[in-house]
Length: 384
Image (cartoon, rainbow, N blue to C red; front, side, top):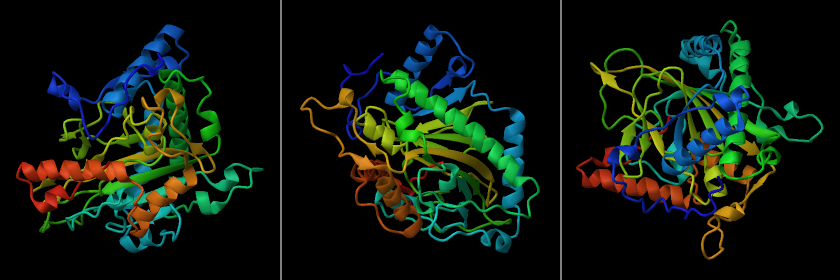
C-alpha cells in the first residue's frame, strides 16, 4: 500500500487521462470499516481508494461517517438562526486579531492567502462565523490563545452553543478517523498523525452565501469566496445541495460539485500536500452562488478545518522525496504557515510563500481568458 514507488506528480503539468470525465468526478468512499471496526481487508480497501482519490482529485465524498442526521439538523438550525439575525447584532460578534467570531460580507480576501489579487470586485461575498479549539482545551501544555483564539457565543440564538459544539465534536472525530486512513494509505504507522494533531488548531467555519433580498445589479462576475486552497491537513465539509461549489480539475477547468445524499465532502489542505510532495493534492476550489431572477439563491456550508499542532513541524515524507533526494518543500512550522495564510485572507497581506498555489491560480485564469472569459471571470476563483 505504500506509494513510495509512485512517481510524484507535478500539479503544474497535469497528465492527460484517456477518459476526461475522470478528471472531475469526485470519488465517493464509504469509510464504515474504519468507523465501525471492519476487517483488515475492508480497511485496506478503503485506504487504497483514499490514496487513489487523494492523488487524482484531492476531493472525496465520504459516506459511513457516523454523524447522525439529528446532529446535522441541530447545526443547520443554529446556522440559520445566527445568520438570520439583524446585521448589527451579527457585527457585535466580530473579533479583532483572531480567527473567531463573525466575518461580514467582503471583509476577507481569500485569494490573498495565495498571494493573488483578484481582478474582480465581486469576490468574497459571504459571511461567516468561526469557533474552534481553545488553548485552555489542552491544560498543562502552556499554549497561547494568540495561536488558538477564544470563542464567542451569540446569546440571541437559542441552543446555538450546544448544537454547534455537538457537531464540532463529531466532525473532529471524523477528521481524526480520516488521518488514520491517511496513515494506512501512505504506508505509515497507524499513529503517524498523532504527534502532529494531539493539540491541533481546529476551526469550525459556518458560511452563508447570500445577498440582501431583492434584485441586484452585478458589475462583475460574482463569487462567494476568494480563490484558495485550504491551509491545514484535512477539511471536513457539510454543504447543502445548492449548486455553487467548483473544483479545479487536472484539466485546468472548473467543475461543479454537489454532495450526494448523506455524504460529507473532504478535501486535503496545504500541509498534507507538503507531506506528500504534492502527490496528494491540496485542490483549488471556489463557490459560485447561483443567480435566479436577479437574486442570489442562498447557500450554506460548514467546514471543519483540522490544521495540526501549532508547534509541529511538517516535512516531506522520506517516501515522497523526489528522484534527486531533494525536498519539494522546506520544513515549516504549522504556526508560521497558518499565520501567513490568515494574514492574507483576514489582513490583506499577500502571502508571498504560496508560490505553487499562486501559479495554479494564474494558470487557471489564463485558460479561462483563452476560452473567452472576461478579466473579472479570470480573477474570481473561489472555494467552498
